[in-house]
Length: 107
Image 1: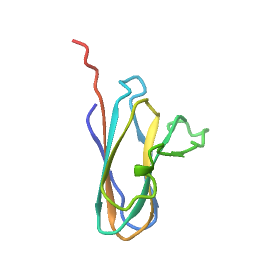
Image 2: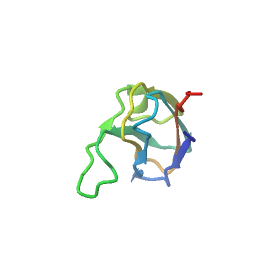
Image 3: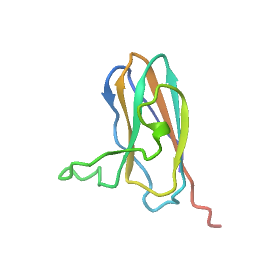
C-alpha cells in the first residue's frame, strides 16, 4: 500500500477519515510531523466510513504517545482498523500524518 499523507490546515480541526486496507496485513506505521504549535490526537474506527447510514465511533489511539501531543511522534497498530484520522484540538501550526500499511508479500 502506498503511504497516506494528510496535513491539518491549522487551528482546531478534525481530519478526514483515511481508510486502510482491511484485507491487508495488520502492520501499520504512523508518523506525525508538527510545524509550529499544535495539539493533536490520532484516532481510529472499525466502522464503515463509506456507508452514509453509519456514524463512525472514533477512539483515541491506545498509545498515549499519540494522544494530546504537541511534538513529532511515531507509533503503530498491530491490527487493522477501517480508518484513521487526526484531530487537532488547538494551535495555529499544522500536523502532517503519514500512514504506511505493510503490503502483500506473496510472490
